[in-house]
Image 1 (cartoon, rainbow, N blue to C red):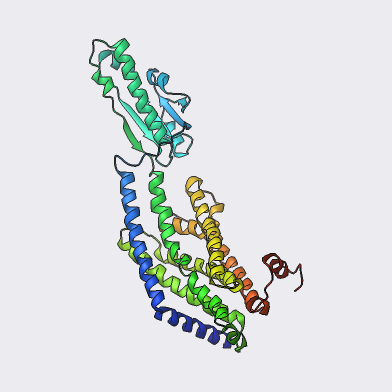
Image 2: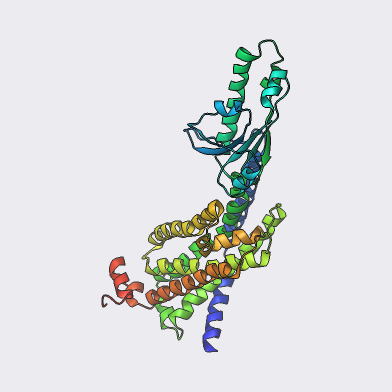
Length: 397
């Protein structure tokens, strides 16, 4: 009972002081402005990608792409560049299932009577099925267009000097999209995930000011002397920052929904994002407890956040590319699957939740160990390697 009272007292005190701070309100408004600008940028980029002119993703170097060709006449298959396109001949609809499985990037289907149609001067029907989740689709599309033009030129000069060559020159390709394009997936999934998790990294300065500031203002001695444990002090300060982050995440979700982003399972998404704030706050507390001053703490947090962002976003990218089960340990992967409405098995959901809980306990435990040591608070502090060995019990203090 006493623990809970002390804990909540520190939390309420830190929370109220932060909200009353003009510096915090200014930062808060600036962050919302950045959010609005990012929304406009992402929406503009998505529209550009979906437009006809688009943004070309064709690699500048020779790439490798697989294409099934149903060309019973055999004309088109001869002119496709084998150094760029790996060609396989198929005469049935198995190619569609091969596209869905990711075995090939496209399927070119030519009229079975193409030779007869060319001889009669008729239009040759060509249908190109592309996997729009494969960035190599641009290679396939460009090579097919190039093949059509080359074949038209050859037929015009050698085989059809007296017929209507417009039937071959103006041969059109019908594209059938089998899935959403990869760039659009990145914008709608990964970028939205980044926006949801971004508030968690915007309040590190509060922890620094709260912990490092205590050292520089020489008020840390007063806190330590109070009838309250270091665990309660850190937990109270940390929960206040988590509460502020939760407030901003809620506002950002409202803004994103108002801007037209579709977020399904909003409650679960919100809870998991806020839960992820706990280990990030714990990690920030470790750095703030060990740092001598603001500058040192800022540098440490910058490097630490780069690692955290990598742990969050890399598994999400891996999951998009090949649906990896192990990628679910990242809460960003789970959040991405939740707001897109994808069905998630309970073990996959628990994987990320348990990971976050374990990291939360670990980070706050280490932060508490550091904060209760006089050599960390008042100096002279041990070096990082020596400190790690002492925490692991390998070396004595």
